[in-house]
Amino acid sequence: MNWEDRNFIHPPGRMPPYWCHRPVASASADDPGFPYLRGAKNVNTGSMGLQAGIVGLPNVGKSTLFNAVSSSAKAQASNYRFCTIEPNVGLVNVPDERIDKLAELVKPNRTVPTQIEIVDIAGLVKGASKGEGLGNKFLANIREVDAIVHVIRCFEDENILRDEGPINPVGDKDIIDTELQLKDLDSVEKKLQRAEKMAKTGDAKTKAELEILKRCHAHLEQGKNIRELGLSKEDRTAIADLFLLTEKPVLYVANVDEPSMHTGNKFSEALKAAVAKEGAEVIVMNNSIEQQIAEMEDPDDRALFMEEYKMKEPALNKLIRATYKLLKLQTYFTAGVQEVRAWTILEGWKAPQAASVIHTDFEKGFIKAEVIAYEDFIHYGSEAACRDAGKLRIEGKEYLVKDGDVMHFRFNV
Image 1 (cartoon, rainbow, N blue to C red):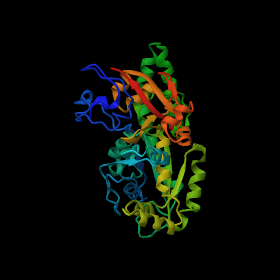
Image 2 (cartoon, rainbow, N blue to C red):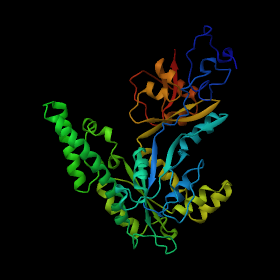
Image 3 (cartoon, one colour):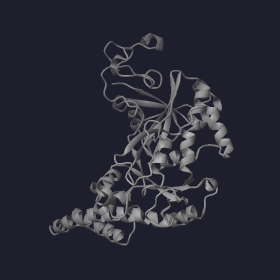
Image 4 (cartoon, rainbow, N blue to C red):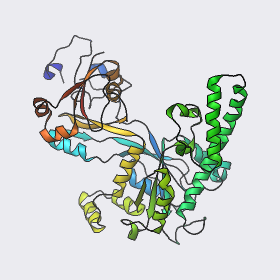
């Protein structure tokens, strides 16, 4: 590859400004065609590194769900309480029809979707906050993830072990909530004791922190989760170092039997009613069916299987998209002949931050961004047509990237 093919000249030894998606989106640090990237350590794959952890009581279908969502790792689904001891981590493609439509127009050499990380965490049991059932280890694994996917059993099957008695999705949810709340209460109490001593010095900041800790303590003692307390961004700084478990965003998976996979059942309805005040989403699905679909390698077999079950798409796709949203992530695209690629950023990021997920130098030397709204790109059919129609915008450092933007970055370092 030589730079003359790209219609610009640059001084030897100096990195030229260029449009990111053409030479860089498919570049590697070892590619001799990109001397300025050789040996680079900050070339990004587009993943934010944020994780969602699958949690729940033993034998509710966690590992079955993980087997379905992950093609990079398989957890051994087994009818034992502590089958999954070390958390399994898998990178999961985020289903997004927009990247397929862009690829149809651009006809790139390859298409690269964005991904999120899913962690399969072993089943919690009552008493986990006190170390029961390897509880300390499991709670530590939950502390490390950024969001929680709580799988709850909403089906009856006498062949699948259950120590908690009759099927009770609300009771199962309460068991997990209580264990997480007790662990958080312990963390808050320890910091509260330290803050009370320091507040006696009269420091205004410490006194303000003390009041927030007292609010959290009272809330947890009432059996409520911190995410429901309505703390402001400033308030959260007082507890940021505690990494509280009940502060993490959560969505629920109601694992139902086959006859209920489209309509839900009395168990999933009870769960929805119980979490209504939280504003949390409940995804109704049959984890076993989803695993079977995910493991089918032949697209025709998969389509035939879904047609038999009257499915337009796997329920898994909805779950992955919901998890992506739960993590407050959004996507922008780069679209060129070499590749069409989806990139993951956090909601509210500005253009230079968005550029950094491709390479840190993009943020350091950011000049400007060329932006086309996804809808405009699809409507006009190409970058050139969008430019001619006046739909290509030049944006600076303060531009807040919108979900679906098709972007080029110009930079110089």
